[in-house]
Image 1 (tube, rainbow, N blue to C red):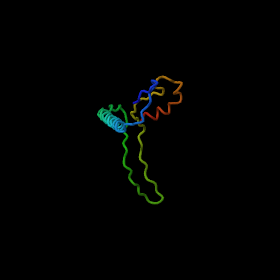
Image 2 (cartoon, rainbow, N blue to C red):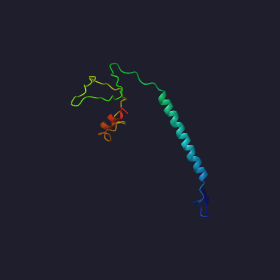
Image 3 (tube, rainbow, N blue to C red):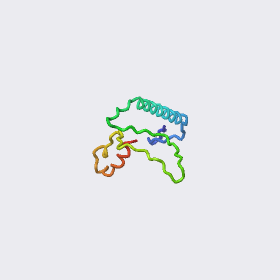
Image 4 (cartoon, rainbow, N blue to C red):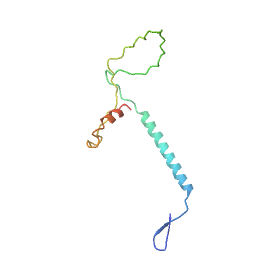
Length: 114
């Protein structure tokens, strides 16, 4: 707040209300955290899309230590012929601004599986 001076200009007061500043910061933190929790809850409730036909399910398996004798190799495991991952589509130029996003295809490709 300022105090009106004799010439009509506003002079800032030198007193800071630290209690009010702390209350505003605490309120912002509480509201921000609560809105983040609600958004996370809402997004986690949504069901995932049904898998496409012909999609190979990929699951991480625990690593098993292989013990072989000296000079022998472990038997390799056959991998599937192809793997199709369901990822959401991301455009290379979000607002059709190709002048600015001419070299953004790599970034768009990397952001899809995340």
